[in-house]
Structure formats: C-alpha cells, structure tokens
Image (tube, rainbow, N blue to C red; front, side, top):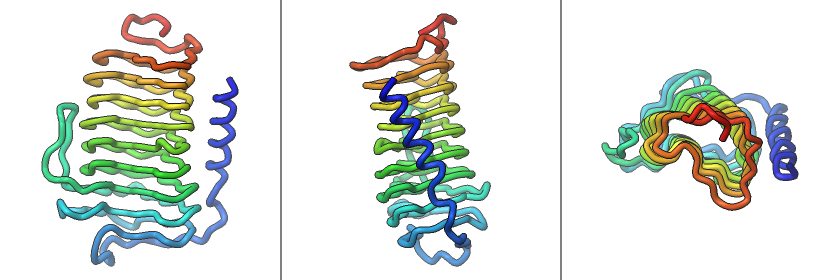
Length: 237
C-alpha cells in the first residue's frame, strides 16, 4: 500500500506540472532536420503531422529541458519502421519522442514507426497517445505516469512503466503487453499479446482485464494483487 500511495503522490505532482508556461507552436513545415530539439521549458503544440522518412535519423522530437509539455494536438508522428507482434522491419529511427529531462508531458496524438514510440528517461507523463508499429511503444521506467493510451502492434513491449502508475490503458497485439516495475497497474485492458500480458515486479496490480495472451500474468518478487483483475479463466487473478 505504501508503494501505491507514493506512486499516486508522484502522479498528482506531474499532473499539476507545466501549467503556467506560454505555448510555442511547432510547425512541421518549418523543420529542416530531425530531431526537432526542445531545450527551453514550456508548453509546445504541433500544428501538423510529422513524417520522418530517414532510416538514420535519431528520431522526431527530443526534449532536453525540464518542465516541458508536448501536445501533439491530435496529429501524428510517423517513422520508417513497420512492426507487428512478430517483429519489426523497414529500418530504425530511434524514437518518436524522447525526453532525457524531468517532468516531461506528452499528450494527445499518434506515434508509429520508431524503435521507441515515446521514451522518457526521467519522470514524466504520457496520456491520450495512440502508439503502434514500434518496437517498444511507450517506455517510462523512470517514474512514469501512463494514462488513457492505446497501444498495439509492438514488436517488443507495449508499455513499460517504472516507479509510477499505468492506468486505463489498452494494450493488444504486441509481443509483450505491459511491464510494471515498482509501479501500480490499475484498470488496464491487456489482450491478445503473444507472450506475457502483464509482467509485474515489485508492483501492485488491480482491476485489470487481462485476456487471451500467451501467458496472462508473470510475477516477479514482491507483487501485490488486490484480486480484482480478470484473466482468461474469467476468474480473479
């Protein structure tokens, strides 16, 4: 329970961050090379789709400042990679959005065709993102808050969360569904993933629907189940 309370406290702190900055518009037509780099704290919003065709580009958007909110504004960031649960092909651009800083927020759009769809190397939040056709679609192992995302056709992990919370996400048709390390996995739908549905380590999970995966749940040490999740057997798990 202590782990859950700490995760919730972090979630609330990130939800309240980055709300006082003026907004900068990102016009993809004006970007001459990728990645587009953000080195100033603030709020940023896309005004169109981004298509990274180069197989050697590091990625689409790189966040190198603390306290950045990136609103995709319903638009798409697309790379050259094509993935299914069986693997990936078509070259490799490393990331759709990567942050190496603290309190990064990525929201409201679509990302596909990268090795990492969203990669947070520091504390942050990913919300309302449709991530597909990536090797690892959403990776937030350094205090991540992942909410209301739809993730599918991932050659590796659909969602990986560490020291945070994954809630109300849908993950399907990936090689591996969701990896939770030191986190709370709550009210997620995880289905039709080739290998594990949920792999949990030192975590709490509750109220999930985990169905028709190769193995619905694989548990490491120190995992607490509140026995309110439903698995393929249609019983608690």
